[in-house]
Length: 406
Image 1 (tube, one colour):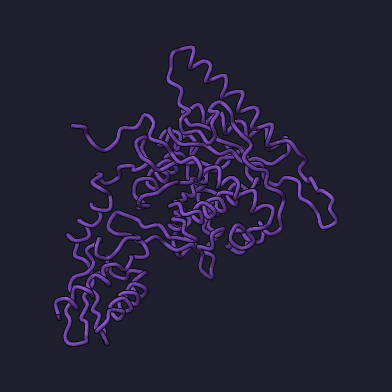
Image 2 (cartoon, one colour; image 1 turned 90 degrees about the vertical axis):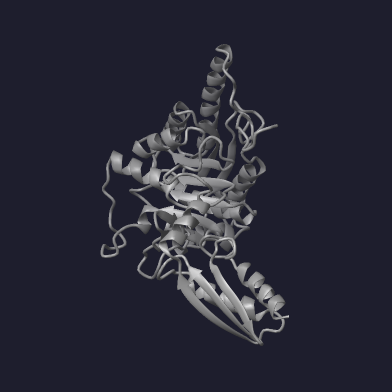
């Protein structure tokens, strides 16, 4: 009977999920032993590192899980730390056999990578990206978010990943593997999480090309996102170093272009899409932000004009159509199987997001509008983009499957 009770306690404890790794403790080999003496369960677990930020939560949930087993009245929990050899074995297991610093989002990955770009700053690209990530996670998808806007990082604040001083939390490290903080179900990484703690939260990052490339590369290789359905990358505005680096590292990525209705933004937004296409990436859609809003009296305020989003979509569609025609003429294989819509040569205007005080309030408070006020017109339009992406996951076309036929 004691053996059966021990097995039941072990099963209950092993089912507890590590909040950072998002896997059961049993799968992570964190349960070192379980013994039952009468109605007392003696449970021994090993955390990944000394000072694990999730230690209190894990201890509490392990104690509750053991106490929930019928016949257990008391739980004696002891907590240790993995040895270096155990941590190394864990990191190798988490990488799935991949070598250290090997990028998991290559051409054969089933994770859809979407880079969110804009031609210029100030169009609300980061706010839209953060809300889009949260909306996708709310649809049951496993979502990762890289804040690649190194000089103007804002994703942590938009997701509420900051402390009272405005600083985002530092990722937990397991040897050379980094675990991204999670907000609203979105695993997030940003350079703001690595700034020295003795600097003010408003400290600037003054880096040039090589440092920027290395940062983006490390975000892709050294951060453990686990199995993702979609990885969003919040790109810096324009067509500079980071855009080129992402194009080199992820030439198979999809691109979502953000603009405002005014010509000053839409003209340069086209350029960001063209640069993406030059690296082999595919523009899957345009999102127009700061579009006309309906006022309380029913009148419309088009502060930034109208038509910019449609103009960008039309210009990029024309370019995509010309490129496809040239590829067909040369006998090339068209690569439209994974496009957001059925017409691979068309770049659709996926949504027109109106000016919204609620969208602004959510960004300032770190509570995305898709969560705080999902019926707000801006949230409804962002949900349309999430639906479009969720309906068309990355397909299997032209990718080898991980088995060999006999």
